[in-house]
Image (cartoon, rainbow, N blue to C red; front, side, top):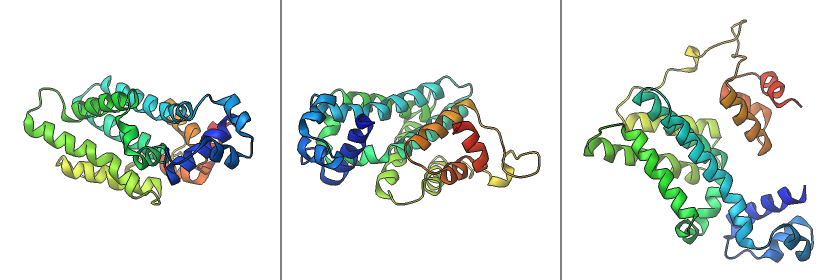
Length: 233
C-alpha cells in the first residue's frame, strides 16, 4: 500500500539524511508519487514522524507493563531487560532516525513518553526497596541496552541481542545465561516447535518488517517450518 511505502521511504531518508534535511518532495520522489499525492496521505512531515515513532513507543510501554505484572522481582527484571532490547532491535532504524536529529528526542510528546519509559525500566531493573547502589547499577544497565543497537547496526540481531544481555548480566553480577542445549526441544530432539502467544506476535511483527524466515527462526530457536506455520502464508 502507498501508505506503508511512504512511511518506509521516510524512515530510510530520515535515518540517512536527517529529519530536518528531508523534504516532503524528497519523500514523494523516493516513493514515486507526486507531492500532492503525498499530502493526500499525510498532512505534514510531523505527522509522518509521529506515525513512525508511535509503534516504537507503544511497544516499549507494552513490554514494560507486561514485565511489571510478573511475579518475582527477578522475573520482572529480566522480562523488562529482554523486552527493552527486543523493542530497540525491532525499531533500530527508527531509533537511528531519531538520533540523527537529537532535537527530536526533546520534543513533547515523544520526549515525555521516552523519559517515562526509561524511568520505569530503571525501576523494574533496580527492583523494589532498592538502595542507591542498586539504582545506579540499574541506570547503567538500562543505558547500555540501547546504545549497542545504534552503534552496531550491521551486526546480526540475534548475536547482538545475546551480547547485550550478556553485558547486562555482567553488570548485575549474575551468571551467564544457560547455553542453547538447555532449551526446550522438539519430540525428535531438534528445535522446539512451540511458541508462546507473545512470541508468535513478535514473529509476525518481525516478518512484517522484512526479516527473513531463517533469521526469525534462529532468533526464537525454532524451525523455519514453525515460523511459516504461525505466519499462515
